[in-house]
Length: 303
Image (tube, rainbow, N blue to C red; front, side, top):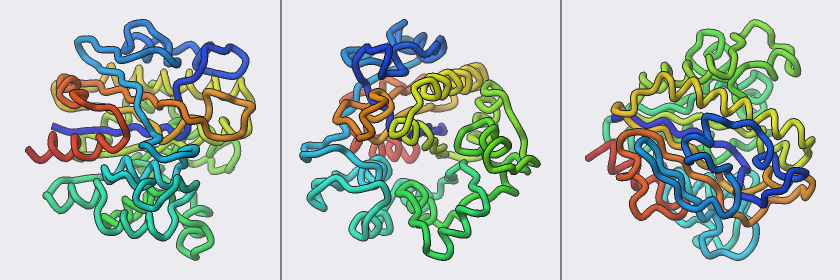
């Protein structure tokens, strides 16, 4: 039994609006097939079939205001209602209270304590890693959780050695914008196949994609559509190479944003959670909000 968690920052279930919501127009044949032909929009409801469950998921957790990355990512990786504990949604990076909770316990750390192999599969460019080490940039809650478990964040050399993937999966942005041109360049399908190969080295692994949140804040709309179509290609590669009997692939997010391009703020919409694999119904039973991810992963991997 193994679990691969695919995190997409800032995607929610929004209105069927072809001018503000990329989910309303993007060509996503793999993802919509897994949700019985339904687009990932507000009102989709729970969808289940032989291999997957899709559940609109509450990121608000009873706390007023717009969910934020710092606290919501920490909720995903602790199972605790951190916004309620600290009295607010907070982000984009974790504040001191959130960091203390992540240091005490998080999914990576708990699984390693149980003898399981875990990994955050993202590789990071040298400039970001240097900024984190110098204290100029705070790690995200996801990065912080991995570091608290004892993992050193993967580097550009790990990407070159095909032990990690860039945040945007294919390496295109590293080549075209960071001018790091000696790392592998994958098609979306190949990136999905590579994620499966990497996940098979661990009991629990996670990949974090942040560009959806960036585009949600800044646009343009067309780039949001392209990101979703790229991710659909990644999932095509995953579905073709992941044996449903070997474990689960889970997709989720921390808050809404990219489903309302032009607003520049997070939304209070539900976020999507998709569970793919033979035990999807087991994971989905009683699932409704972001606090439910960690306890289910722990149960399935340590039972």
